[in-house]
Amino acid sequence: MTSSHFFFHSLSLFVIFLIIINKVSQVHAIGSVFNVQDFGASPDGKTDSSQAFLKTWNQTCQNNGGGTILIPTGTFLLNTLTFNGPCKGPIFFNINGLLKAPLGKCKDDYWILFQHIDGLTINGEGSLDGQGPSAWSLNNANGPNPPSSIKFNGMSNALIQGITSINSKFFHFQINKSKGVHFQNLSITAPDESPNTDGIHIGDSNDIIINRVNISTGDDCVSIGPGTSNVHISEVNCGPGHGISIGSLGKYQNEGDVNGVIVTNCNIGKTQNGLRIKSWAPSPPSKVFNVTFDNINMNYVENPIIIDQHYCPHSSCKNEGDSQVQISDVKFINIKGTSASKEGVVLDCSKSVPCQGIELRGLELTLNGQQTTTATCSNANMNFFGPQTPSECT
Ligand SMILES: *[C@@H]1O[C@H](CO)[C@@H](O)[C@H](O)[C@H]1NC(C)=O
Ligand SMILES: *[C@@H]1O[C@H](CO)[C@@H](O)[C@H](O)[C@H]1NC(C)=O
Ligand SMILES: *[C@@H]1O[C@H](CO)[C@@H](O)[C@H](O)[C@H]1NC(C)=O
Ligand SMILES: *[C@@H]1O[C@H](CO)[C@@H](O)[C@H](O)[C@H]1NC(C)=O
Ligand SMILES: *[C@@H]1O[C@H](CO)[C@@H](O)[C@H](O)[C@H]1NC(C)=O
Image (tube, rainbow, N blue to C red; front, side, top):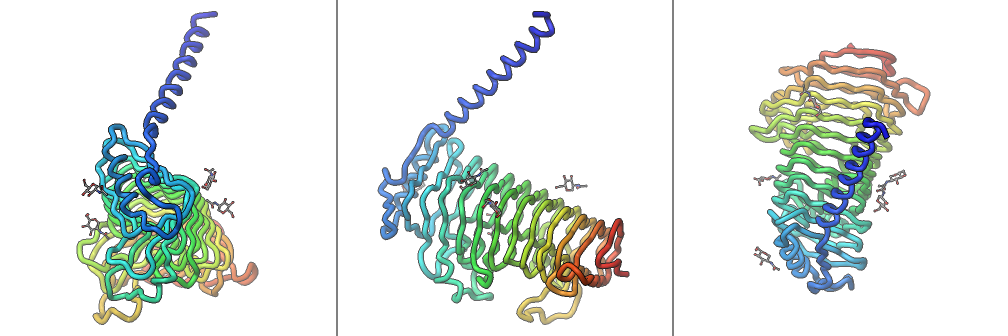
């Protein structure tokens, strides 16, 4: 063996050694397994297992090096629950069965809250049933928010994968004040007409990844609220629902900016909107900038591309006035497919802070594959590149 061969041989041995060390440490991280049934949880679908889950959480969270909370198959009834950190190591919340929410109204804005935890993995082939049908008719736009199925507050380094969320009472997943949350290989479903059942709602958070998630629901598939930066959304199948949305913004004073959103390789079908940015009017000032939508397929979407800075549902805005949310540097690249209405592109920006640097690059949006759609733009500074169907608006 020459010395360079020897060097590479040693190097590959060293790499194998590193891989083994890495595997061993992973095994160690999930080494301690705490089965909820050992703490009194019952898979019979009738007994409230909340206390048993809390005991399991406490034990696992306080275990040096963390551990796995094992939820076997079966149906577990759970009341409103809070799983608090910090914990003494990474936690794996392994759902194999079905977790069922209580019927009807709840006092909090979550069913299950994970809070102040660094290094949580939620995985398994199990499901969460929010029992939404028992609560949707009770939702009141002026009352407190109904519960999201899972809420994350002050989390860092979380991974959610494999599970299914059905029929949330409000949002399926809500992320607040968190950093580094990764959703992957999930399925999220609720009926088309269910109110406010956003798939994943993000607010005041950064470094969020959503990859390979199928979302059919009654509201936005993903909604990005104020104070959010660095969001990567890819390979999402969205529909029915209201599409992928930045906003609503400008509802409250002192909202944080939205900076750095990338949405790529997604399919959006039979939704009310495709790609949307919306802000209330009137509204206090904030900013949205550095947003890229690239390679998105639309299938029978009512408003494939829409910026709406005059958002005001249920005629609740009485004052006159413009939105002060400044939208800039937004790219729509390779957006193709069919619209369900004549309106392919609607950019309705604020008169007092017009949209800046809106790039449309390669659009092919037709009505049922044949007729072209229309583009209407107001108060928008635009750049066009490549083919444009609908043709450029002025
Ligand atoms: C879990 O721990 C918290 C905080 O230490 C405590 O308040 C709570 O009573 C514990 N719950 C159970 C079910 O052990
Ligand atoms: C995705 O999740 C499903 C359901 O939990 C699981 O069966 C499948 O193996 C996962 N696929 C990948 C590629 O992780
Ligand atoms: C987000 O978390 C902060 C800090 O815990 C809290 O004050 C705020 O009310 C939360 N917001 C939402 C929407 O839950
Ligand atoms: C999402 O839908 C696609 C197409 O139907 C399917 O191939 C894929 O397995 C689904 N993924 C999940 C996580 O359900
Ligand atoms: C724009 O957003 C992307 C994605 O979050 C980020 O990587 C990049 O640094 C941002 N660019 C600027 C100029 O802020």
